[in-house]
Length: 139
Image 1 (cartoon, rainbow, N blue to C red):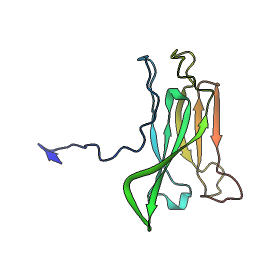
Image 2: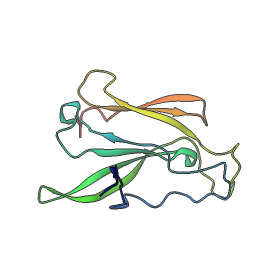
Image 3: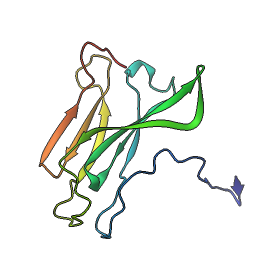
Image 4: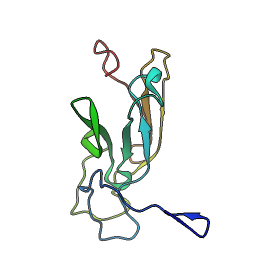
């Protein structure tokens, strides 16, 4: 919708709403979401998946579009957890104990045509590469 030369967006669909609720203003989830194509050759040519950081819940999520008879129902995704930085304890709301993840990157690190996800894991002081399973090819 255009109003006075401004474009405004309104929510069209909710992809996922099962992130934890925090009692502390210092903690939050979700974090950043980025487009993800399993094959680099598909980038910009097919409907992307979404890779979503759970931020302080310490999880990475993959949201894949749901296809019905070859077409996509706008906004419909299946979501699964693809990485966990540590045991998530919703009873412990301390910023010190949060399994916080930092910014992630999506790219083909090894040149095999399949994208990987690089995760900054603050909780464990690590940088982790999530690679697609070999033998399955790109999904």
